[in-house]
Image 1 (cartoon, rainbow, N blue to C red):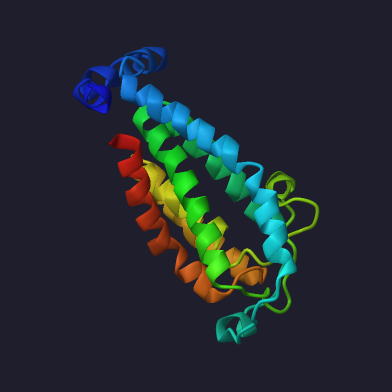
Image 2: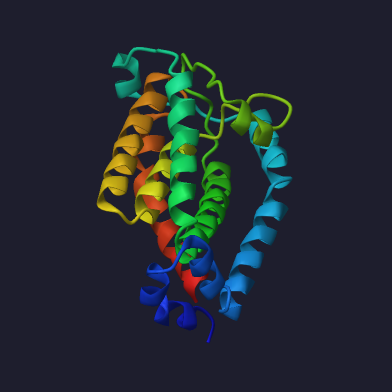
Length: 220
């Protein structure tokens, strides 16, 4: 019965308390399998992050002329970037926990998004833009390893994550907030010169493809 059981009981679950919704959803064997699999993959990816990012930081890439970055001021926006990054993460988590199926989509979205960035960053070796200002983010830095990473460029993880939240969230006001945070994040990482324009522009469409795959993995 699996996820189909969960789908058939969606209307009934909506009227239950949070504990009741989880208890009802937990009856679907496939949901448990999907959830445990997502947790296992995330645990396996955790030690891969610092190894990968330290590797790409040591390699040489290219720098190309980004005309838009040349006219943008170079300003340290670390604090608003940090607040939006983790504030939206907490906000989205509180929303999706209320709907277990959305939590699965978010978890698989994070998995697919990060694996896709491993691939895209590997295929496009870039050196950071001139004038880059390091982003202060003690939480993200824990995943980077010993040294600060500047070459995780194509495509922008900050922008992509915000757009993933936009795709996952269901309420209209929530989507509006996430869309605004996506636009703000894209502008801010460019003003701080930590990403090229192309890194930001391609983040939403590539994230959408990741979301489609993640949703399929979470529900089939």
